[in-house]
Amino acid sequence: MQNTKYKNKVLKGVRSHIDGHVSEIMERFFFERINSPEARNVIYREAEDAFKNQLDDASGVHGIWQGEFWGKWIIGAVQVSEYSQNEELREFIHNAALKLITYQKPDGYLGTYRDSLMVFPADREKTEAILGTPSNWNWNIWCRKYTLWGLLEAWRVTSDSEILQAAVRLADHLIKQLHDNHIRLADTGTFAGLPSCSILKPIIMLYEATGNSSYLKFAQEIAGDWMREDEKIPNIIANALKGIPVHEWYPDTPQWAKVYEMLSCFEGILALYKITADEKLLEACVKFHAMLRKNEFNVLFSVGFNDIFAHASEQLNAISEVCDIIHWMRFCYELFSLTGNKSYMDDFELAFYNPFLAGVYRDGKWGSRGVRGCGHHLTALEQAKFTHNHCCVNNIPRGFMDMSQAMTMFSEDAIYINLYVEFNSDFTINAGRINLSVSGDYLSTGFAKLTFRAELQHPVKLKLRIPGWATSSSLTTAGKRFDGNNADWFEIMLDSGHTEMQLQFDRKLEIREHISPARISDWYLIRWKSGDDAMKEIFLTERASTLVYGPLLLARSKYIGNGEEEMFGSPLPMGFSCNLKVAESKEVWYAFEAKITSGNKCFQTMLCDYASAGNEKLLDDSRFFSIYF
Image (cartoon, rainbow, N blue to C red; front, top):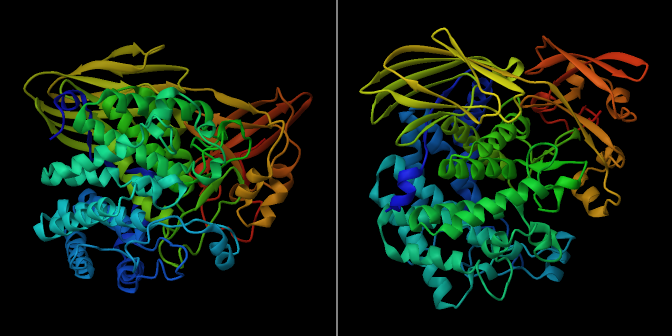
């Protein structure tokens, strides 16, 4: 049911097997959060119990989001079961889905709100009396979105029609409920209806699974409401097509410009484009990405300021929700798959190796609610009255699995190698079968070795991404050397047999200067500290520099012996220089000895990759790391 134009140009991802340090982090997380006894008996059970207890609307005034966690956990678990070929996990998913649908009502409703029609924004004054702060929280349809998505993933991996029928009944009930009560989807929930409207993607998935045109009609209804002539909020397609920065679309951005949910909506728009071939949908997404890259790209290589589009690119301070990072990566991945524009994969790479991995805690048991540029990351030990599930933590498996799919992709006429940390791919294309192994130390030295074992009917084109940060690049194979300067890709034909290729991407340390805005509103400080008053003391109000070495953002950290005075003292004057030498450390992924020269002064210090500078629960130490110099 995909449009022919889309099918002819799409790049398909191969599920590559990740090796090396990234694999160690990932596998530890998968065990602790999905496969361990605690994951099954405590974490998962808490998520499932939300449907038994139905406490999301217990206040009678506002709604919370316990109902999202089951779907998120299942989505991640399904992808992990496929990646690891874990039949026992697949069977657990099967039984979990069958158990969940026992909570479905005769009319098809399956949710965690006792009142299925409690879908409108809460009254702010009444909510303030309960929460102590005015809020219009209502996450009813958002929760149903993730339940629908989780059921569809469970059906895909089990082929059990009973699970698919439960998804059909859930969606049919929601659509009928909205239409019978003349409810505009964008008028429900919170944040201008963006959470509710992000159900667009699983609705498209349901259409693909069933072929029922009513779901495509509903999807087009959602998208059509984002192209209004009266410009009623949120109107995200029309506004994106105009090329206006998001923070200028409507007043009071904190009340509607939610990063995670808006990116989720744009992912749904791309899914609809794949069905309809409506070029304005793709155009809106391309323009939206360009707009974010210009106005919302923060110093951590994510977008937004603590989950709000608020002109983050002009801010020196940075805090980024892990959900935002994951969906920024996913948006870039989807755009790359549709366009082949390697700049999207450049953005994916920077987001994965820096803010995403920074948000995955080293014990594998938890993750960050928001990664910061200095101090410590924001850790939320409770969310929606749950203590074992969290929106960002439950989403982390998808980030790893998106990485796995992005490494190797192929179209009808070429194979694309996009990322170069250690991995193995084994896949079949029209021309035959290929095994690829990637080794080397790409992140610290820029070197990668590619080993192909191919059984092909005819030669196929290889396209090897040249990262945007590379100052020069070379490809060596069969005794021949090719320079890739000023190019986006190395292109070479692959024949049957054993082939080795060596890639070298040279780099130089980039010292990035960041000026502080002339005026920093109190809102940024409040969002930065997020209730942690100790963070207020290290909120930057004067210029600073950051160091970027190839794809790695660098930092100082107590893990490698940096002191607080060094990390949080006055910024280095503009014009300083720095030389790096790779060092050994058991505490961080990459460590460097740095020699810094500023005027007549010269000193040595240790630096490390930002991702491992503070990746654990550091609740009692607000001055643990810093990316600022």
